[in-house]
Structures are given as C-alpha cells and as structure tokens.
View 1 (cartoon, helix red, strand yellow):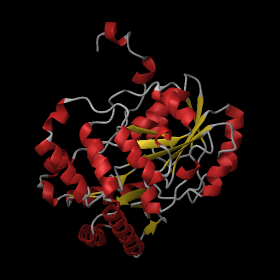
View 2 (cartoon, helix red, strand yellow):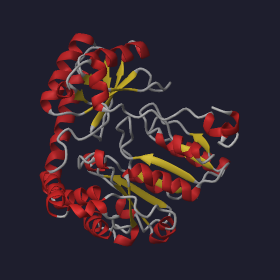
View 3 (cartoon, helix red, strand yellow):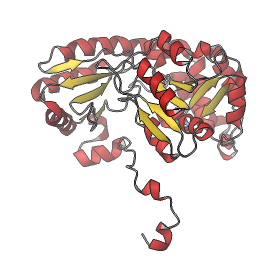
View 4 (spheres, one colour):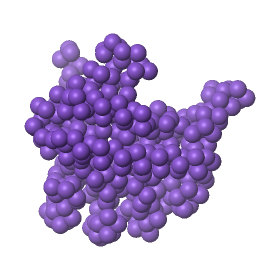
Length: 370
C-alpha cells in the first residue's frame, strides 16, 4: 500500500489479527470437490431445520404481493417487530432495540461505552467477537479466565473491575464455544458491580433459561438475543436487545436508522407467530444434542463437556495435532466441524447438532478417524 495512504489509516488496526468467519458453503464445496448437497455443515451452530414454514410463507408473500417493499427503506423504528418481541419476552417495546444480528448490537454497546484506553473484562474461552470488537475501539481487554469447568470466576471479575476500573463485561449464556450455562445467581452477583453487564443469550431457547425479566429492573443489564439459532434465520441477520429504557434511549441516538432489512423483519415476526413450531424444533435439537453427547462420549479419547446450547465441545486425547487431524479428516468426507486455534482450546473440537441422519453419518466417520 502506498505510504501516502498508509499514513491516513489507523496504525493500531494494521496490527490487528482479522476475525476469521466461517467460509461460505459453496466455496467449501468447491474446495473439497463435492456437491453442496453432500456437505454436512456442523461448524457454525446454525439450525439444521432452517426457518419455520410460516416465515418462508411470509417472505414468499412479500415477493408475490408487495414486491415494492424491497425498494423502500424499512421502518427505522422496527415498530411491528418490537411489539411482537414485547409479547415474546414480556418487556415493553421501549426497552427493545433491534439490529442486524446481535453482532451489530455488540458493536453498538461498545460504541456507546468504550473510549480509547477504557477497560473491558473478557472471560475466555468465549465468543471471540467481544475482544475483537473492543480492540477496534482502542479499549484495554482485561482477561479473567474461566475455571477448568468453564464457569465464570466471579471473584476474579470483581477484583479486575476494581483494579482496572473496567466499564463493560460481555458474558454468553450459555457460553460459546463451551456450552456452559450461566447461573442466575452469578448474574445477580455481577450486577452489583459498577459495570454494564451484557448477557448474550444467543442460545437461550435451547437452555430454557433467561434473565431477560431483569431488563429494566437492573439499569446496568443488557440482554442480547438473536433469531439466528433457534429461528433458523442466520442468513437474514436479525437480533435484538432488551435493557432499561434510559439505556435504550441512549443507544437509539447512535443506532443506524435502517439497520434491519425488510426481509429480516418479515421473517422474524412470522417466526414469533409460528412459536409452537419453532419450540418443537428446538426440543428436537435438544433431544438430539443429548443423544449425540452420549454417543460421542463413548468414543475412545473423546471427552464431551455438558452443554445447554445446540452444540457440543469435545476435548480430544492426543492434543492439538490430533484435534486438527480429526477436523481435516472429517472435512475431506464433507463433514464440517469447528476447531479453535487458541491455547485453552487447541485440543478441542466443537460440533453443532445436526439432524439425526447427519449426526449418524458424523458418528460413523468419527469411529473411523478418531
């Protein structure tokens, strides 16, 4: 890059390691020389059953009956969606903000709180976007590692908050990539600290627990949710957050006005209207998760951690090289799982729960390569 351009760009970004997202399915299929329909995708915690029938029908109806909606900017206030969400989570619409996936809302919260040099607590291993986004704002990321069983070190967090003057803490509940649930008592204890506590409940529907009822009761609590996992809408990028109305009013000032597209809003509302079907699908995934956990644990050299999400973290005897080899061997057969090149997880693989027939293929191949 010419020096004249380099001097205009932020030097701290040049030093950052880019976040590595999942490679598109079609690209992977081409690399492997396999047709897309042969790929079993168990690497991104997506819903293997896809969107609800009502969501698909609602999208088709827009295309058929009112295609002009796609040529017009969407509702900047997401009024209909926030009313539907209000019924779903039991919080008034004024406490709800919607975004292009919960990733946008993570960034929005950081934009509202973090200035260069401010401290944010991170509890690894966890979702890497928390520390990645914080670095974009020049924040100091203070790691407080989890316990051997991946529970939050509450006293360690409290000590770090006092020592560093930290302003913000994100906790995934259940945690990603470990699947560890987060006890309500832990949340309540952390809410007593002088920080904003953002609880990322991307997998809450699979866990069957939530602290969204505390939004509005505790002003320093923000609860993030998404339609990517339970509703099968990852490709449409739609999420939301619930919080005290004073905080939401603050975030409305800096939110992009047209951040949720028409298709995403239509599909999200239809998914909430099809709640019985969606919860039946969630129950199927949970049942299959438990079956898969037992089957994986029966394989030699595989330790399966308890999970309250729609995925399973497995520690592989033989270390990082063996875990990577299993990932690569499965990929050659068209089965995609996740490997984490991080010190605390480099001997682990993460497997998203697929349909029963997909999981049966996974188990059969694992018996050959594990």
